[in-house]
Image (cartoon, rainbow, N blue to C red; front, side, top):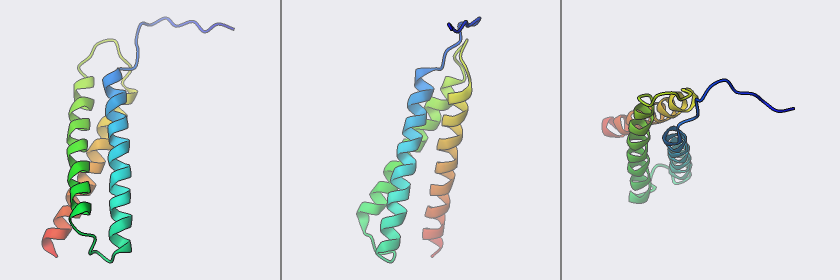
Length: 103
């Protein structure tokens, strides 16, 4: 049976890319945390560089996600997912950095 669509809306490619960027940032943060725990908090500068890279990816992903809301005739599923994913990851990284500064 053929599906019939009565709309010309589509998912914005930029929002899908921003979602993938957010997923990559989460993987980086997860690996960073696991490696840091395994080394007892003495993982070195490479873990810090991974965290900084993840933060930059989150900023880029959040900007792309927010800009996806400005497009017309699109579904808003991926812009919402991308903005939320990057925003929450960015907030988590900020908390991790703040805890490191206070320690």
